[in-house]
Length: 477
Image (cartoon, rainbow, N blue to C red; front, side):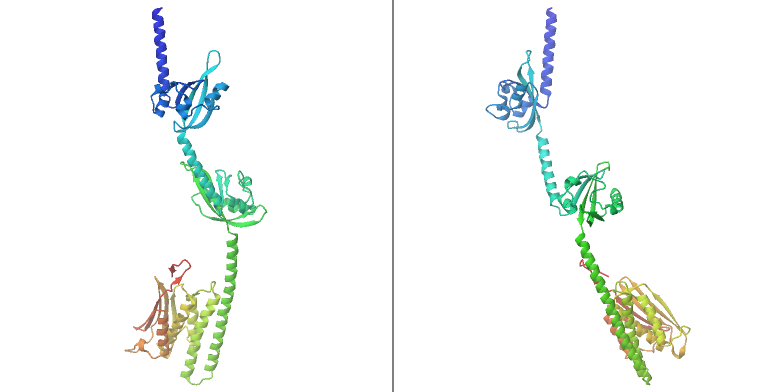
């Protein structure tokens, strides 16, 4: 019998030690407190957190040890647990423990069913509270930022359903946030006739592209209005789409301004075409008067002088005629211009294509009015000289016209296989009006003019492409 009692005592002792080890191993703060709020047992976590010896805690008031209070609160979780006989949980900041805790108090029932003490467990949630505070602060900042945006903003889940909208989108569409959140697709502000465009835009957003889209939306009153939508996709670590958000900009006023600008440009274009047309007609009248006057002159030299002046005017008339036929009135296709000018000069000089063959190697180049007129006059003078002097006595020959652009330089070459230039001829000091005019016009183009004679005559004019200032302040050719 004695051995049996000894064995029971050892087992009880062992169980008590195991219980105490378990009690101390709990990372949360645990204390057994009686109905007078006196600490009867405390685990190591409580003593460590308070920085005192565990024995010092036994017999102290829990509200003094943990909260620094002189007397317990009537509604503290321990008191409520003793009153109700049930577990009571609340969240509170404990001054002595310096942090936020979830406090859980569970009454311990005596044999008669009464509660004379309770177990208090305090779990430290300070870091969680700080994180929540930080998240709340961040959310408040983001909410304020979204609310202050002038453009509309919609946030959608993976199904395309609204989960957040900002006031600007509500004001823009006329729908309240309650009407939009949880709606779609299709969303209330989608114009039915634009569904296909919106669907195509949505499919592009699902892919690698994230361009801006110009779409038609609809206000609550049915009014249609143009918008630019800039979408973005949010994905998880596995690449799955978890949400979308898009900014929406009402471009109604911009569209009106663009239409006004287009209308203004159309009016100016019409006016400019009319100006070119009238200039062409006025110059044609001058050309006609010169031709009429030339027909009455018996002196050949004087008549040729009038005819040459007339042809120079015709070369300028042709520039204005070509400009009036262009799409944007800013430049003419110089290949078409040169081919037409060659035919006119050959016709003026009664050149038959069977005797003189005109070959052309002209690139598809456009020149503006400022460059086209002097360049056209140069071509007129050089071709006229070639037809007049390169093939005397009606001999046959070939005239080659080349106009090309290399890098930023235009190169005009007029070459014939005629009789060539006289020996020791200095084209820079030539007394003829034609060559003097070519030198002046080449300088006007900020270019160079050279003539060489080798099995005929070759004239070369080179000038740089004009630099145009564009709106952003850069310069381009």
